[in-house]
View 1 (cartoon, rainbow, N blue to C red):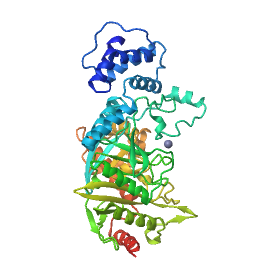
View 2: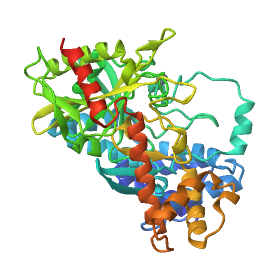
View 3: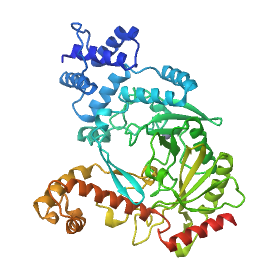
View 4: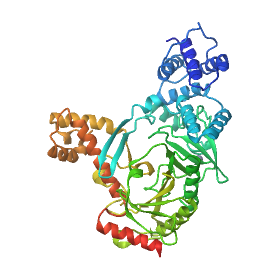
Length: 497
Ligand SMILES: [Zn+2]
């Protein structure tokens, strides 16, 4: 594919995917020439059905060969985003189309916007498809596992360049609305192809976008138009339902607002949602509970390794008032026997990870009780993955994991491949520093399974799933036994009285 035919192919792609109109073709060719620092285009042939990845590769390689773009991953990502930005509709056009479709149905609106987010390459689909995914059945249902490989790799050239750069506070963070259309820097991704949908949540200005890393179908982020910190509150619960009412086909939840049990971005208030049913949503109420003063709300303790109270009702106002009361009581709750301390040395520990959804004509709010206390034995957190499992995962258990999707570090893909070979060939796992941390675990697996070249990968996947379910149990503030259930119900009594 020549550079000229790649440019034409990219314009054809943009027309085919509805990013630009056929009337925009000449203009689009000239925009792309400008980004490529070229002053003319040859011939008139395009390339039928070339993939976006192949088209961009031709253009990137050419730009790098002429010194228009530095040849390393971060610079290439900045450059191809600039190319895609030239053929992405303006924000106002996307918003107008979204709103027009919304008046037909919310599904049509999100379907269109998700399409634009993918086809503009804001979501890099050809990278997402490299993610490793599987499902492990457990007593709590089918747990989803993903090894995420689509986040940008480390780029030594860009890291060196970033060190020499002046600190910038524009945009203030990755979630600020100022990212829309931003050219990016070596230490901040380019977003010329990024479009944001404004949302009115009961009179407040919020915004909708998709996650560029889509951990699950239509993984969206709803974020405050103002850069202010995460805060779990009754008002936040009301916002969750305002979103669910706008998009009844989406669940939406929030990370907790304390370190260790929260997500990676605590500085900009946001929610995450999407069109996906996680194992936790399918998990039934195991112990029904009555909420005094709230006759319209039913629910109870959910059969899930973490400690979850589900509130079900048709009146979201009643659900949110009760949830606000539960939150306030939980924040101040101490039960020494259950090793729950509201605070130590004035530092608060209790918070909630909430998830809202609309199902079978009823609204549901799952309140996952969280506590971030640390001890000498568990310096990373008592209700956090314990050290025995750190060879698989030591990162925070945030909203997505709470719901039953393990997002595992990319290192595991290589490690599991090496480990599989070692387990099958009988090599000394402890002698290989790349995988020695898995030694004990691998030996246990080999002791209880007849590992062969054929079944080893599947066995490892299932065992990782079991480790993750166990991790979720460690993050639950109440144990899954009779004593834990009594302690959980003691808290419910405290709420009721
Ligand atoms: Zn921000």
